[in-house]
Amino acid sequence: MHTLIALLFSGQAHAGCKLGHIKDVTSTMTTVTINGAVHNVRGTANRKAFAAQLDACGKDDAADAFNAWRQARRGVNASAAIGLTVLWPALILTVADAAVANTQRQRMEAALR
Image (cartoon, rainbow, N blue to C red):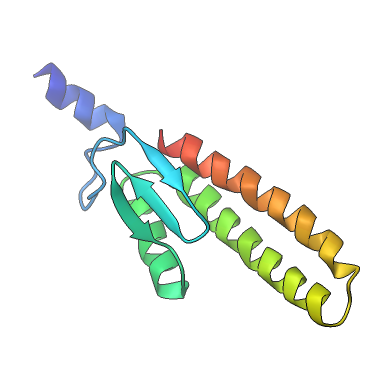
């Protein structure tokens, strides 16, 4: 009985949540690994599906951080492309964008733990 009550209040008992009890979270530039299951987050469709899964599990803070992380990653890519092709001072923005992306990635991982 205590387990059922704990599940109801843990945020993991949401209908449609497929992540289960989260014990381990790691991420790379294109994947998020939760309890050994790798989630590809490269591309719009994959990002939307992963964010929807976080929302389905009641992980609103993690979903917000995930979306902010991916937005910052796209900023890194854009500023690097601009800096390497026409405006080398834009490379300074790449470093700043990368720092923001890293902070948001860490925020997402912390919110999932």
